[in-house]
Length: 53
Image (cartoon, rainbow, N blue to C red; front, side, top):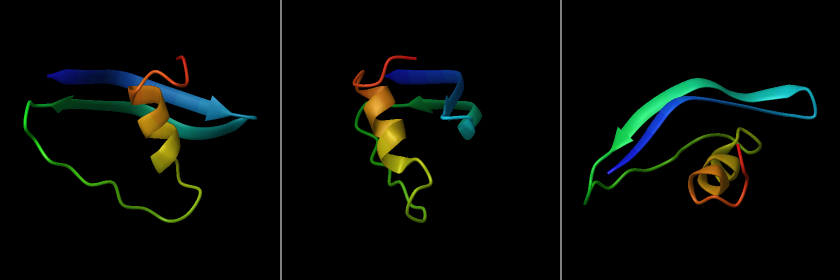
């Protein structure tokens, strides 16, 4: 299980995420949808540890 609690992230003065919380369960399949430049890849990089927070 992976838990995200109160995740906020800003880049160059632009808020990308603000106060995100979610519990990912083992075996759960999720999808990320959104327009270009809305932070989907940034979120995945944070969750995998490529971007430290």
